[in-house]
Length: 340
Image (cartoon, rainbow, N blue to C red; front, side):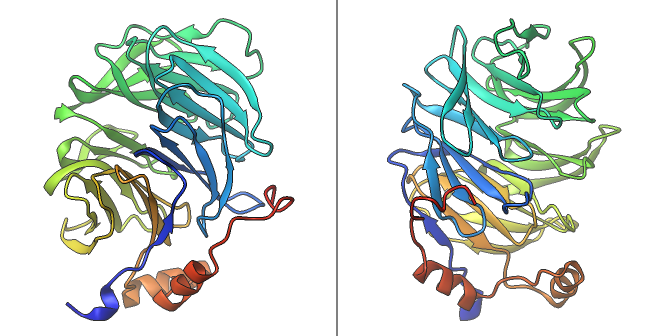
């Protein structure tokens, strides 16, 4: 193996227990942000590009299983084993709302228009909270057939996607009627489901395979068997030509979307990889692990095609030297720098 192909990640410490969920904001006027959920009860916000710690959201009394940011990165939400979902001010770290549930909350997602928060968990109920009327009772959709593991919005907030911990398949719900309108069949439980930013694809990981579905017609576009049990997968958002997957073998694998061929394999985590997500520009991706760290990897080595695509976007891929410089310059921001 050529030495130049060894990826040097940015390593983000801070969590004292496993990192179980990651979420990137879209690009905002202040850059883009990465929020992480951990069993240590404290979701953390970071600069998505550098990995620098910005702040910690304190208030949960149990493991945090899921986290998200609204599209402007002004509010954060978290779902916890303490039977609550909380909404936070992402600029100050203050808790804005706490929505009590009757069991563990496993998943949460802000609607695209930022006005609604969707939650799901062990109660087998999908709830929609109105952020403009947080004291009002949430809207409840029809009972989920199983314990909810993942949730997402699509079709301009007209459709909700969910998967279950204890059964295969991804269910698509019509928000207006509150009923299931379609099921995407998988053999095993879907532990990760991601809607691509352009709304074209749904990417799912179900342990033995990663699948790509047409998000509008719901047909299966691609299905690739994985070399190990994978828990999470993410599609490169700009060109859609690559995807990453992580799981039990501690490695973060990069694959060609069109052929399924493995392009790169990144080693560094000391425990199973629970979550992988691409940054909004597609130039890097983050992995969260049982070992309590987040690693941010550059999508490299770049091929000639990728360089042309990157130059067309005005954002060339960062080289290893640049990554090394970032690691050497890694710092916790001083007070007063946290808002920018």
